[in-house]
Image (cartoon, rainbow, N blue to C red; front, top):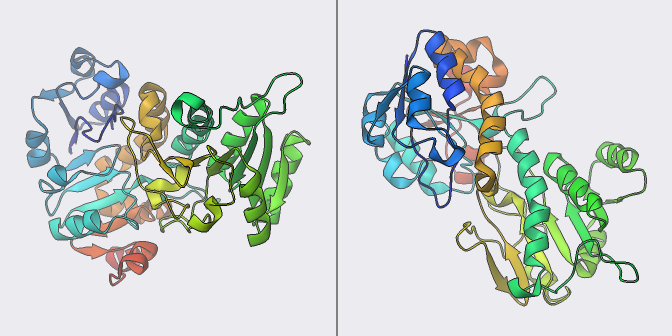
Length: 371
């Protein structure tokens, strides 16, 4: 199979779909790998590195979209990229379709077979291709929040860990999954006063056992959430409903109860965000203020630490990329139901139930296509 990867064009996105090492593995399996010139610059991988791995360098993304049977990316295709997709082609990348009707419509129209990293599952129902970026984003959310809390960036002027004689910042983490756990770890490590909210008693028990009193856990009822948000210096939105739009848990009315200059970091922004006042931002302009509250809603947070993120991502995406290239998408999905869960769109049909429900499409089950 001819497999291609292109330079990401989303604002300040420096990751790349295939590292030189991943390209070498695909070549070793007998596949042809095309790489757009300069695609790896953001992670310190030169064109010479790709050439040494056996990849073919191409000067434009258009050549790759036109000739490659599978395109491996990191972020969702941008409008100019979606216009180049075609029926019979495989797109393997993050998609986050539920809050993005324009992208979904374009993918449906193109006829492409689109496999989304974020809905591929594991035997324990976890999301292994999302996990490494959730780990990165969770940890980065505390760095970003700490910076946004600085007075020069519009925040309250609070140091997360405080100093002797001055209380630390109060950090509230909404959601105890991978993002929330990693955010809490970072915040605890910096000496902040941390509370994690979740609705799953098993998650709360696991977090309570792990942190051993260094972070508090609290069942996320409406009253408890409102009270914690009102007292917080920094709120991390770490809620995930796999493949679906994130629920709006913090309303605009709740902002009026918060301390002026408090910070909201919405890690769920890829799925539409879990704060009512969230809108996607970029690394170029990461924050904005609503009712005196600083919002950080960068939709590709891990892109800022591109080398770490790319290698962590390739560790989990490459095995499936090899299976798809070796077997073809249909046989690869038949052989692995967990990979089949990643199929979101195929030849004009929406195959992921949550996306179909949220955007009003007829749902065609993957099992029906594979029968």
